[in-house]
Length: 238
Image (cartoon, rainbow, N blue to C red; front, side):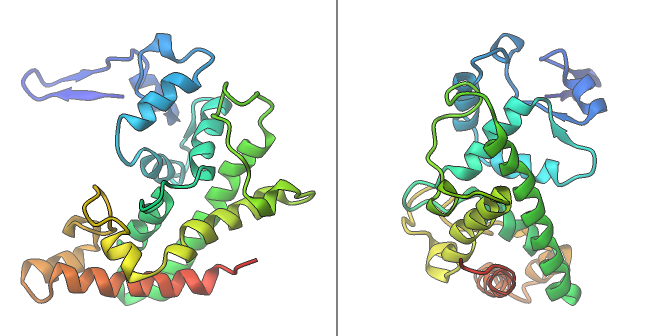
């Protein structure tokens, strides 16, 4: 965690390790050093619930070359956030993340580029949940207790891929409807819909909005429909 002081033109490193982490490309929760030690779940859970888009930002970073969690325990914790289903009426963070990533893809290369991006997401999710399945730490130390989805509970081989596909189907394929993605099941709830701001789209589409060649409502509906077409082409219900 690093801050920049505009007044003093100075880098501020409140944790004492932010600069080192940036150099090593380590991902660490923004918590005081005395809250890194075991059992970490309590502190990490408070950190996770205390902000928004924690999982989305984490996935964005681990998709970048060279970036990785600062410890296996933290990776297991973040993977547990993938496994845990979203609350009723809340769009899963994975769905928000994927639709925002796909919306940034240039329209003139949309289908192939979006498909390749979704395949990349599948690979990242598979690697992340592998740490969850392989963790030897008891529930409560590196992750909250969380039951495995039914297809994985009795898995005997290639379980990380099975779990990843199960989560992608649950959070992406089964939420692919305008009612869920554009309004959300509870329209009054914060973050109830995807792609609610113009900066989430490709610059070409942002310019179209700026010059009033389209509206945000039309652009959201069109982009969600295109994204869901790609999602359906990649994911298969087991």
